[in-house]
Structure formats: structure tokens, C-alpha cells
Amino acid sequence: MKTTIQEWKQDLPEFREKTAAFYAGELDKGSYKGFSGYYGSYAQRGGTSSMLRLRMPGGEVSGEKLAFVAEMIRRYQVERLHFTTCQTIQLHDLGEQTVCEIMEAALDAGIITMGGGGDFPRNVMCSPLSGTEPEEYFDVSPWAKAAGEYLLGFIKAEKMPRKLKVGFSNSPKNLTHATYRDLGFAARPDGAFDVYSAGGLGNNPRFGVKVAEAVAPEDICFYIKAMWLTFRAYGNYKNRGKARTRYMQEALGGADAYKAAYLEKLREVFDSGEDLKIHPEAAGVTKTGDGTTPSGSHIIAQKQPGLYTVVWHPIGGQPDPEVFCAVSDAVRQMEGVQMRLAPDETAYLIHLNGTEAEKIAGLIEKDTAKTKFEQSVSCIGASVCQVGVRDSQGLLSACVDAVRTAGIPDGVLPQIHISGCPSSCGTHQTGAMGFRGGMKMVDGKPAPAYVLYVNGCELQGREQMGRELGTMLETDIPVFLVKLGRTVAESGAESYAVWNEEHPEALEALASQWIR
Image (tube, rainbow, N blue to C red; front, side, top):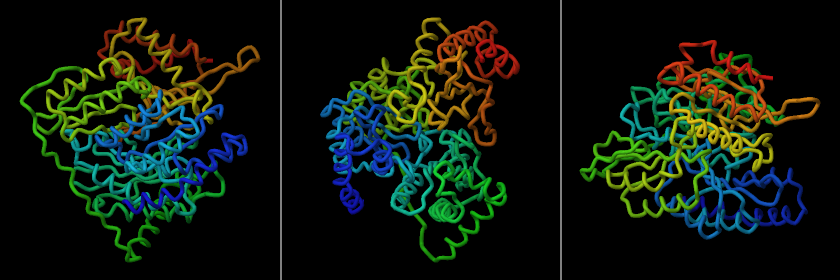
């Protein structure tokens, strides 16, 4: 790994040079965006500051990495960070020198930013509680980390898709959307993986094609290389709008034809004689509890007796920097504790004994969601993102405030998913309820608006794209959600999910009052 870090460092002078040129007005934002994505950095909207994406393979943030991020927050007075839906940590509002210095320091800390944006393999995703959940099929985290290491070697490969997202799931909960990523490994009860390929959300959404069953975990890198070869052979890398693996399903004539093409490349990889088998170390947990049993709504028990996890979901995935630093300071004094980031912008602090769990729960209490609805998901939004259309974070904040003011009880509203544009970074297409940013002409003038999606599902075996109901003005959405919450509460249903199932036509009828 040290050699790789040194190789990445050789690219830093060029980043400094181009970043200086951009901030001096000598390089336009389009050219800079095309360059800086390789480094995991983009200029924010307005071009006066930058963001930096810290890759956290499998969403795992060790105590040492937590301490590094906290140190950067304090040293450079970072006021905004974001837990992303791809299980990374983004630092925002960074100046020209700051983004360069943090990038270099991150490499020294073993955190690679390269490939965090642009046409490269993105952060490998993994079920956040893998290794701790009693109901999981098996711990997939060692395999996800190994895949992440292998994929680093493809960052400079030619003819890559515009993004290559790889995910691992440890159960049918499918939190990482392994069945509809560019490449996904879904755990089975027998300790093997089913492999899915050429899926993805956004424009032209597709569920993945199951290309293999009962794959031995040590063989996963053969399947990763076959994915790359398949795209090189059949992907439309000349058209950026279609340079994603999911377009190959249609281009090749359907799922069966795509599967045949993929398996052809897989045979080539196996026949090449290249040894791609991996044997990662098992992620064993030797820590034991301290005999205490903590209580609190943010604490859950692990399958390891006496150990606990604290659930921290800052609104919109944007933690208070002071709370983040306080959590890091506490974790430094605790044995074997780490953070796991989730695709719904939740952070989990795992491997805590009872006393430690209560301490961490106390630290995050004022900075975490209090209800399922407050755990809603939002991309960073157009106030920051150059390609964003709507301020999704602003909408989520307005909705949370309205629901709190109205006193809507927990459970009667679902977790919603908000994307500021069609890219679906907020995963609006497979949420129980999703909103996609756009606009609507009102009295001849464009007004901020969102398209409403309902009844999407991410569960393996029950995957479903949400049905598009129509467009709501941004200002009407909090009103709609308050009315929905009151309607469900007054019905006596125990939850939104139960109400929606028992009254399948009611949601559309209610929403129609605000659909334009």
C-alpha cells in the first residue's frame, strides 16, 4: 500500500497547478471539473470553493481515520461535511490551498481521494453493519475491502464507464443496492455470492442482471475484471450520456444477451491463467462487554454478546463538526471501535461496550434524527453541486421543520429520498417515497418543483422502481407531508407502510391535491 500511496502523490503537483489556474480564472469550470474529478474533488457552485471526497472502502472509518478527519476539521475550520450515499465523507467549502493540503495529508493517513469522482471506480460499498448483525448471511466486509484494493488498480485504466459502482450486501435488506449496481455481490446463506451486473439508478434506470450464482468469495476479482472487459467491448464510452454499464442491457438486446456477453468475458479472464484469487483476513472481534446493559433509542445490540452499536443520523447526512470531533475524541479512548457509514447517510459506531455506548449516545443525542422520517435521505443539493437543479437539503430541512411544528408522531411518515436532479444521488427511484428536483411553469414563469415517486423498494427479490405520480411545487411538499402524516395517524394504522398497503389508492388521491 505504501508504494501505491507514493504513486498517488506523484499526481499532486498537477492538481495544485490546475487548481491555482482555476481559482485565478485561467481555467473554465468545465475543464476543471473534467480534470479534478480524478482527484475526488470538484469546485462547488459559484466556483469560489471546493469539496473533497474521502474514500472510505466499505464505508469503514477506523478510529485513526476518524481522528484524521477531526484534525482536518479543527486545523482548517471546516464548517460543513457530509456522509454520502456512497459511504464516503465529503468536506465542503474548502479554499484553494486547503483542498490541496488536505488531499496530501489524507494520503499520508492512508486515505485515498483519487477516483472519488470522474470516470473511475468509485468507493466500494458494503452493508454497514456487516459482521455485527445477527440475521446476516455472513460478514461480507473483508471481501468488500479486498475488492476496493483491487479496483484501485483500475483508476488509471482506459475506457472506463463514466462511473463504476460496486456493492456488497450481507442480506436481502440490500442496503447497498447490490442487485442494481454496475456490479453487485449479494450474499447467500451458503456463504457464497450471487453476482449482478449492469444496473443503476438515474437516467435509464435498470435493475441488474443476475450473471452468476453461488460464486466462491475468493473468486470475486475475476468477476470484477470481467466487468471491465465487458464494458471495453460493448460499452458506449464515446457518448458520455450513455457511458454507464446499464445502457449495455439495451444495446446488446436485453438481459439474456447481456449475460451471455458478460460470461464470455468471464471465461476469457479464467482462461487467461491470471491468478486473481484473494484470501482476506477474517474480521474477527475479540472485544467483550463490560457487564452493563445500556438503554436508549439510538443503541442496538450486536450479535457479539455484550457489544453495542450507536445509530447516528444527522439530518441530511450533515453532522455538526463539533459533534464529529467530540465523537472522534471519545473513540480514541475506546478499544476496537470504528464508524461505519451507510447508504442512507447514517453513521454507526460499532463494537462499543455498554458504558461506551451510553457515552457515544449522549454525544450525538442533539445531532441525530428522532424519527424515521427525520432519517430521510438527501443529496448535497444545488446550493453546493454544480450540476444540481434544486436545493434538496433546503427542502429536507423545510419538511423536517414543518413535520416537527405540526407534531406528527413517529412512524406515520416514511423515510423519503430527495435528489436535486435526475442523477438519483438521493436514491429517489427506489425509496418508499422519493422526490426529484426540477421546475414547473406557473403563470408563464418557472417555479422550483419536484417530481414525486412512490412505492419504490430496494429489498432483494422485491426490487421495484417508484411510480411517478407527477410534479409538486417545492413550497407545497411540506404541506403535503404534514397532511399525509395526519391522515395516517388519524386512520389508526400502526405505520405508514401498513396504511399504504391497506389503502392502496389513498396516497395518490391525497397527493393529487398538490400535483400540477
